[in-house]
Length: 275
Image 1 (cartoon, rainbow, N blue to C red):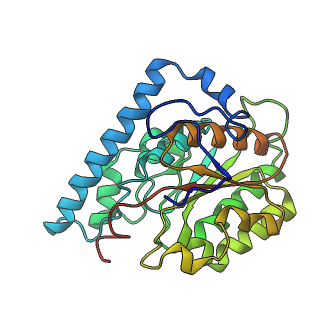
Image 2 (cartoon, rainbow, N blue to C red):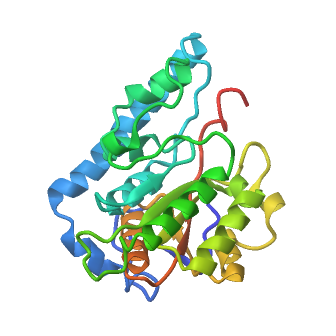
């Protein structure tokens, strides 16, 4: 992993709590996590990995047209997914399977989609505001920003009531940061001070090009040029993903504007079964 001096980590690979200047602002977030919730974090990660492997096998058997694995990125998705409140809207890319499950999506809807048995997959209003998968790389960043602008125009955020204030969470990968749509989303998000969090899962490879070829600077710094604060976390640390996303969403709901999170993780499979 390409950790840097700026990487926020709350749980070390040895399973001990990390207490330093970077982790200190986020450690209080862990106080609200009871043993049952922590066990559910682990359960969700285990279940989606099993689902992922089985779906990959189905594709190899000709039962699916395509499979998009999330193997290795479970912690980033589970932590951030649990950080969102029920009223928040989530715009995935196309491998956020466990985030959908957390929001109430039947994973068979993803199988139906990639088997060609549905045209969209699911109704967001029926799946905890978990919006449709977007196969056009990076375009969901613009969809999310437009929705966040609408939330703001409707007065559904920054009212001071955390139980009703809405925010938008959008997922994408390191390859998407090279797409113009993501840069355009940054422009509008910063200009309109939208209540949203951009969540980048940096799995280091995009489709086939290493991240070093895509950017000469750490990706968490890219948003700062647009006026959006960026932070880098250990994406294999479910506690860091949870705590940093929860705080970022709270700040967005409070009217402090958009936030950008780069979660350093590693995709252990291909970009898709076609690559």
